[in-house]
Length: 393
Image (cartoon, rainbow, N blue to C red; front, side, top):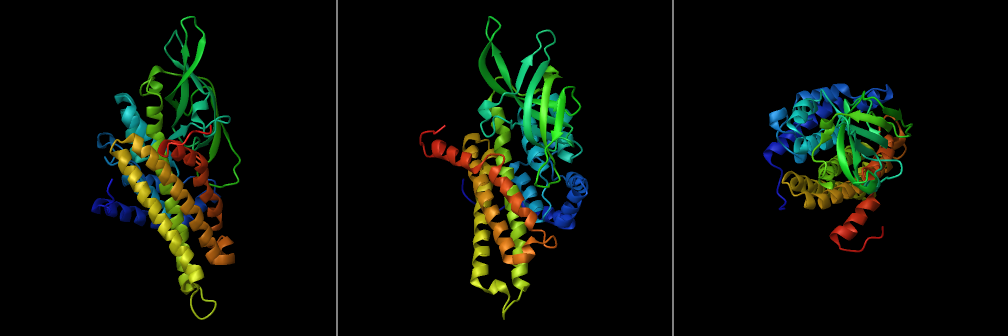
């Protein structure tokens, strides 16, 4: 991929979303969180303006773009201080998977609502005993031989926004049964749409130290009965369909981190321009200016890798996109953590006050290092997939 300047269409989208974000801003989001609510007003307006579904097919009410466009939306909202985490989940993961692999009926039922924001979908993959190892997923889907229905049993943890989602796209594994009726132990990942009110589908909110608009949940599926058409895609497609959702997740996590880093950096720059302790503003001193300049460079470099990953994914090159998406997520997370830390340090004591709104980002910035995959697992991926080194696990 050759690196080229952003198209005018992308510049216009970036400017329009930035204007929307500026009208809401960090104060709106922090107030919403403090009141225990959700950023419904921002979500609704973003949907009406076409930003939530910019990556989804035009035939189903979307913008006909791709992850490249959706990542711009999330980055600019983040840079304004009001990122929408469910953008990572609902249109990016779930919308993409359904658009690529869903039946016509599934597309008709879900995509228009996901595009305009009137419907949302959560994504359930992480399990208590699996963590980053998706090959150890134990949530099991089996067929009822009498009805053809699916029965799902298992647990999920750290699932965002289940309380506000109309359904959750659950990653399960189908069992291969031998001719004698016994389980062979061979398991294949499959994706199922589980309605929020499905019988046997239970959720428990996790008490998080990190406060966000989107709550985290542990899910229990106790023989949740689903019709045959709850399965998204081919039962035998396996990892292909799963990573069709995970690669956009990594790109969007990078966008989330870059936006957060840009927001923190902008607050620090404004402060450094005005704050005067000696003769000149503190931003005139290289000890203050150089770390901020370095953070800006690192965020820009991370954005380039994110744009490359989005371009490859939208072009249909899933293999190359997987490598680039992991790199983008890694680079963006590291740049974000450093930018937030330097921003707080630039403000000194003021960086820890509610007035400037940076202290809460110290914890939030670390999320990108941990989820949806840890930086160590990304280094493992690059070690053996890109460099050809042997696996240690």
